[in-house]
View 1 (spheres, rainbow, N blue to C red):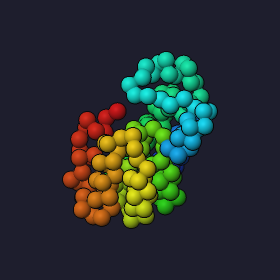
View 2: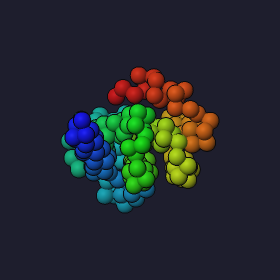
View 3: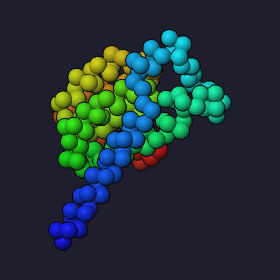
View 4: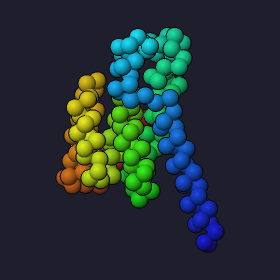
Length: 172
């Protein structure tokens, strides 16, 4: 029995390692993205632009769908981990979530912010405050930051969170 438990723990840790690696895949922070766009080294992606055209014209762009899909899948997986097994998110991994919360893709930011709110750890409050000051792109992300802050302040219990129980929010 002990060997099975150890093997299961090793498998879970490998999945987490892969998820955190994928979360960094061709990632660029919002600040770095704005600097690259204003400096002329990157094209600004404009919603609702033709994604296929954009992807073909910008194969290495951090907002190319081949990269954002990988990061978003990892962010959604980590949101599930935060809800179901929060103890697996160590302090080191929490720091990685804090970095990912600044991703240039709003959907990735949203998933990570929701994970931080579900975890409800006080160390995330300053990160969320900083992110709120920077967020200009998405009203939904701004609202999620407010809800995550409530989670950290203990006003939002995970069992009441719509992020956990609403399948339309968790399904991507």
